[in-house]
Length: 199
Figure 1 (cartoon, helix red, strand yellow):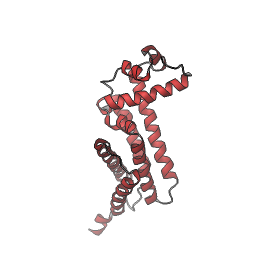
Figure 2 (cartoon, helix red, strand yellow):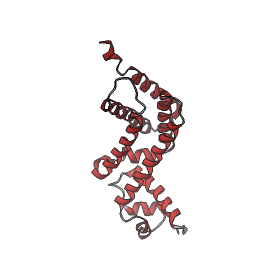
Figure 3 (cartoon, helix red, strand yellow):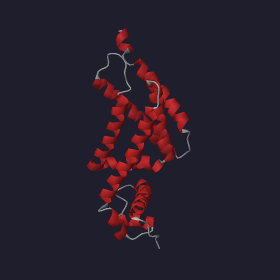
Figure 4 (cartoon, helix red, strand yellow):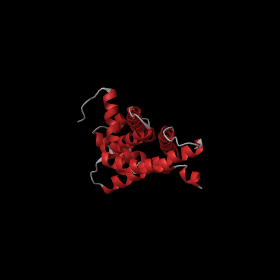
């Protein structure tokens, strides 16, 4: 029998359980019964907190995205220069992936992009991260569109690396991965505009 929890605590518990189930099974293969069973409650109790599976999933996407964006923003805010901002941003991202595979899988690997409403939520996260990164890209004579393109390239670099690490299923050192990826990213950013200047 499930312990009776205050509504806010129950809601937090249900979101945590739903995250695990959705990350493992994906949205379409998961039923509200699956989540209720995993949480040790009845389906009517689950519906007291969430009107539908779609509402629950969207709320989870929002929570996971807020945690990721908050981690990156906090890490970057304490950096002393652009290179350090890039390094700390990657470090926060890979630490998040290391600490919470389920959240990464929900946001970027659970089939969310096959549903337009969910895909829009994921695009908003990527756009927010890219907008934050774009402000760190400040080579001379680079226009805002180029700046934004490079920012999305860096987002893709972090996401692609994380997909590989999560799929491998092996523990990894987020600080080391961040240092390696940041080194590549910074080398690329430092060279932006130089090739054209030398022509």
